[in-house]
Length: 86
Image: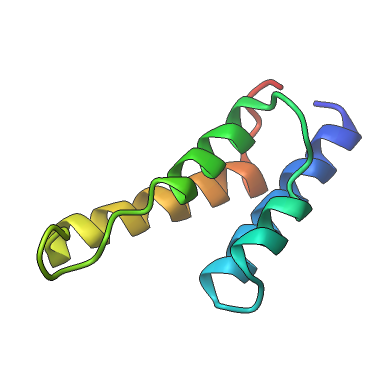
């Protein structure tokens, strides 16, 4: 895998971790994401854009929320450590 692709993926993963930690806003996250057609980056952005409402009326229960969080973390780890093609 090309070094520039690896760098973009790691930058996207770092931005996602910062977003989840409340260190950056959603807009800052989007600005940090490279504007490209990388499948793994696209999957991460899609998951983040479609975050379900947690609890309450119309929200998901705790099990569904934890499942969503695991998906996000798996997407981040795939960007950090994955070797899938561009």
